[in-house]
Amino acid sequence: MTNGHLDIVKRAARLFDAVIVAIANNEEKKSLFTLQERVHLVQEAIREYPNVRVDSFDGLLVHYVEQAGGQAVIRGLRAISDFEFEFQLALMNRKLNERVETIFMMPKETYTFLSSRIIKEIARLDGEVKAFVPAHVETALKQKFHRGGGNP
Image (cartoon, rainbow, N blue to C red; front, top):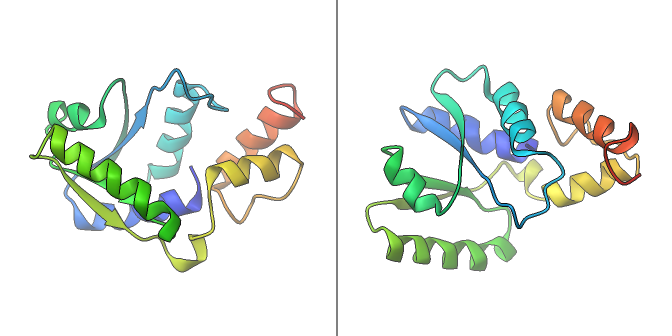
């Protein structure tokens, strides 16, 4: 979870009565952290927001939203380059389930350049990521890359 993700969660928590940070269990995507580790990292990051919780799911997001009793998916847009993919995804989700709305939120401008891929690369190369992620995520990245957990 980056500070950009956290910014979106904070603002969504002010707009909605309940927010679920839903983490996909995607076996095909090679994640640095296990699903359980990702859930734990997000739980730690959002603990001060009483109306936000973390959950994981398999399968289609719109099916998860329906099953969880949700009404909307909130997606962050950092730049124009994100828009085309996110727009296609939103249209497909609408086709799959028209009852689930997609809401796009822009992060604060100070976070528009952040991506988890770039942050992982900086951490892998022993760079400083303190300004980009919560402190516990920084610690987890350092442990993963520099104490036997990743590709140094």
